[in-house]
Image 1 (cartoon, helix red, strand yellow):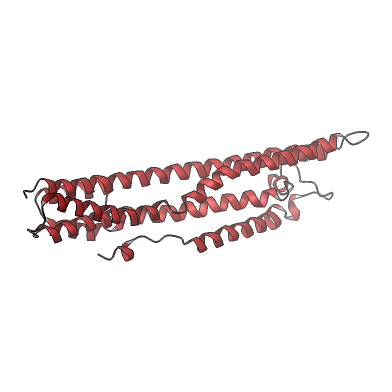
Image 2 (cartoon, helix red, strand yellow; image 1 turned 120 degrees about the vertical axis):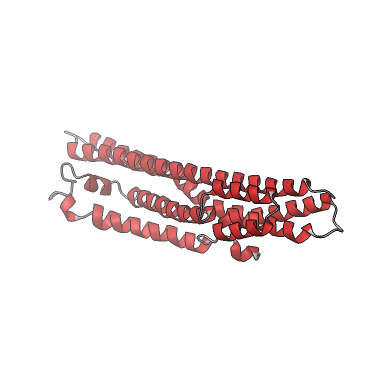
Length: 266
């Protein structure tokens, strides 16, 4: 098996960087031409009553950044979902592991290899590496049981080390976005409150429109940041759980392969 060709790809670092910059551009376009559409404002340039888009536009430069963060979370969530689904293989992982265990117990190595080729994905790649190695050394009478076990374990470790990084790749982007979304939302809140207090500090009667707009900016930026953060945290935890499940399946299959060797005589 060519491990390098069987390892899942996923979005490269260059593509990930381009995606983030593209999300920033898209966020700016949405802020400028959708949120900032003339129909969202009155003749004096204030957001119309009930125009959430207009109030979001008045949030200033923070809004395109928050949009960029949200778009980035959605983009990499889709990318991770596709990659992890491919890593899981064509069939149910639990059923695949049960099949492999039964075939190993019956010493049906060729059937196990066929099952791996049908299943595909990271889990099947790791199992295939171990089963193939087991088949290659099974008829070698010069190797004792301990040497065979060590060889199998090394092969499984190498295969796992090639697959696992591709599963967790780009998850750090989702977790980072989930963290900074709230912080940028708070920055927008502070800016909105500064503008509100500036409206209150004017001599004479305070500008109630500016005051209301500033408070609205603060609250909308806070809500936008929290919503983006919540989505990022949920997606990160979902993918982490799926990766942990795949890792457990790899370990379970590897243990079964090692046990099949250990149960054999010298």
